[in-house]
Amino acid sequence: MDTPIWNKTTTVIKVGGAVVEDPEQLATLLDAFVRIDGPKVLVHGGGRSATKLAAQLGIESRMVNGRRVTDAETLKIVTMVYAGLVNKNIVAQLQARGCNALGLTGADLDLIRAHRRPITPEGIDFGFVGDVERADGTIFQALLEKGITPIISPLTHDGQGHLLNTNADTMAMEVAKAQKSSTLTFCFELPGVLRDPTDSATLIPNLDEADFHSLVNDGTIAGGMIPKLQNAFDALHAGVCSVRITSIHDLIGGTLITP
Image (cartoon, rainbow, N blue to C red; front, side, top):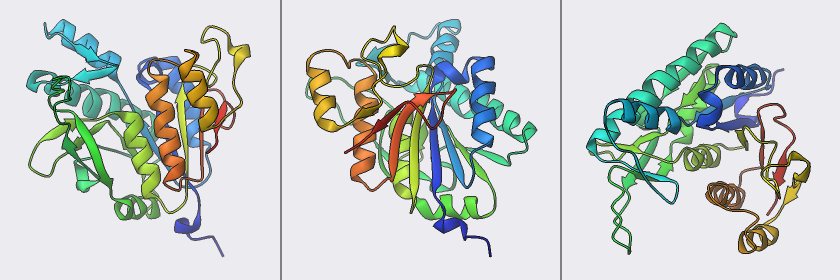
């Protein structure tokens, strides 16, 4: 008798914008994704495409600590790019590979609920940016039970009729947490967490929290890698089976994150 799907490990893959916006890299990633056994979910970014389209339309993109400030006009841009162009391109390519994919935002089926980020103590108003409150694991399970592979774009909603731009790494973490059994892989163009971002030979194969804080303090780990790793440790603390950060060429390699 086949093992019921709810007893199988769900694989959650998060892929960044630099990969999904490059046709060759995206093809490599999707070829690997369809070979993953069992239920799986793909969460994607697309920020570079959003920035490019905003510039073409004369809309200035403003970033604070790597986070996009999202006013009403910018929200229109990211919705068009994330939920439209990027998401449906991935879905179409997966269908061509025999994977029955369904493109969704957090608003669809009330999958992922968030609240608007409050103004920071420094007075920064991020606008229509969402901080996740919960992901509905029962809906994900129902889709996976039917053989549907959810492809999630980084948009949520607040339950009051407002879409919210939401960090894709955080969304992937919340999706993984919502599953009964799951693994989470952050997949991007580098082979994993590197001591020297320009040298793949400096890969850190295993990283725990003590090492993480030490490497942040000495400047080895910086920029966007910090929140990515914070999400990784949060996922482990919430019960996710395993978390790794790796490249599109090796979904079972890279850096294994340990508590």
